[in-house]
Amino acid sequence: MEKIKLSVTLPVEAKTLFKAWLNSKSHSAFTGGVAKVNSKIGGNFTAWDGYISGKNLELRENQFIKQSWRTSEFAVDAEDSILELSFKEKNGKTTLELYHYHLQPGDGKKYLDGWKEFYFEPMRSYFNKVS
Image 1: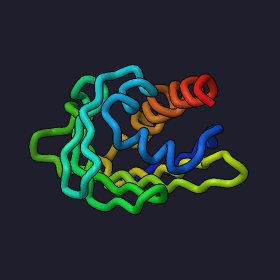
Image 2: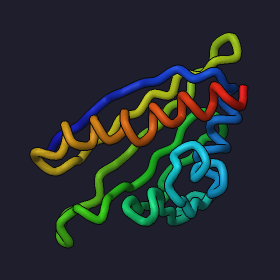
Image 3: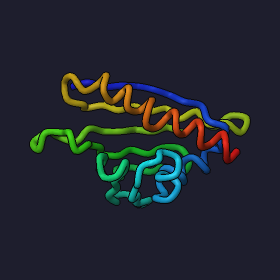
Image 4: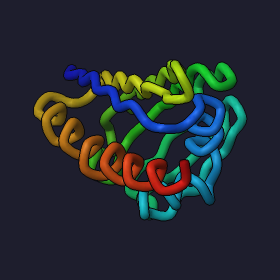
């Protein structure tokens, strides 16, 4: 199994970023793809027009999100991967630390690039405009 770690620092408070991740309208706005998000433990979500799906496994308000995560490209019999997001605020800016693991062999580089291109870059643009 493969794993990836990434981080991005955004000009936004941790609580704002945390709530945006778990809100359908905000998640859709900062990625540019339709998201249907649930903010409860055990709640299902989809993102990027249904390409991504999963379930909230653990939520610590304004600090941590753990989700099962898969894309429509996963083999039907493949286990879900796990996504952990940590929110660390300092001086009004938040570093989002992303740890994505239990990926299928060969998928690490693809999803590393995907997180950068389809999440971190649009998030930088979005949160720079709203801050």
